[in-house]
Amino acid sequence: MQKIGNSSESVSFVLAAYGNVGAFKYPYFIIILFWYVSICVANTVLIVVIHVDRRLHEPMYILLSNLCVNEINASTSLYPLLLSQMFSDSHEVTLPWCFLQMCCMYTSASAEFCSLAAMAYDRYISICHPLRYNVIMNTERVFMLILVVWMYSFLSFIFSFSFIFRLMFCGNIVNNVYCDHKLIIRLSCSVLVHSFISDIFFLLLSIFIPFSLISVSYMKILAVCRKTSTENKQKAVTTCTPQIISVSNLFVGCIFHSTDFSLLAAHVPGEVNIILSIYLLICQPMLTPFMYGFNLPKIRQSRTMLLFKRKSISLFSKRVL
Image (cartoon, rainbow, N blue to C red; front, side, top):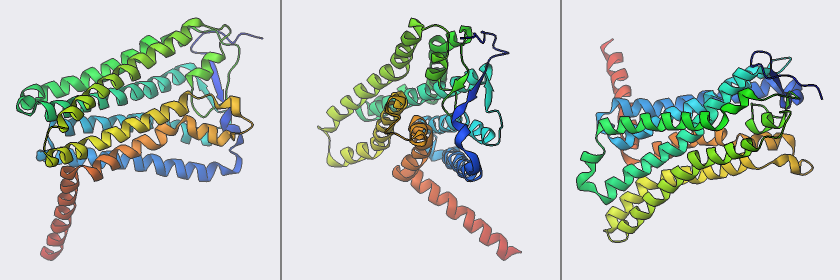
């Protein structure tokens, strides 16, 4: 088998999954564009509501804004490539662009878990140590926590997958719609033991450690809620439910992403395989704004007030004119 080489300037991969699009590229393009715009609008609206209403300038909502920014970043790592490849003849992507997409996708995945861990810690302090909450979770520390989340997520990706740039490749056909690192590593000329180690390392840093922090936080919250009044229990459930649903959905998406459906090719259609592999980037970015926007009372009230305020201003302007 001929070696392609390891020069990042010359190596390019063909995303073979686009080969069967055919006449469906126009409806696919419209659907993908609509979903991507909807994700950006929904998350941006939530960010704007939190920014405009000073009552929402609290650690919990600042962390939620960061989560919404991450949803937009994660979506942008995938959907623009999908849209551009719909009308491409070659479906080629160079190694640097592939690495950039992997960096954005996996950094966002890590940031998602870490952001939820930060939000769980915030709820733990709020419910278990309410008198010390304003001291521990002040604005300066919250922004520092957000910076740590992004730096930690980026470095966990770099330490785990930077070796891909040094690989020699003996093939360039990637049977997916994006640069899946597992499929790209399989195209290398030699089987690398440290590729398996890097996967374990990334899972440990980006999923296991944040999930452990989330689990400990909610176990402590549960222990405290058992001893409090019914009203306090209801408040805890209202604020914690969206995070629990988000974490559960993330695990479902991770299972779909990690499962090798090529072994079940006879039973699972190619389109289903592709959809399941990007399940997280389809559902999670839209789940976040709707779960928090409709379930948290303060955001719901603020959104309603902002909407009616705009309507009243518009009506007043028309009467004046």
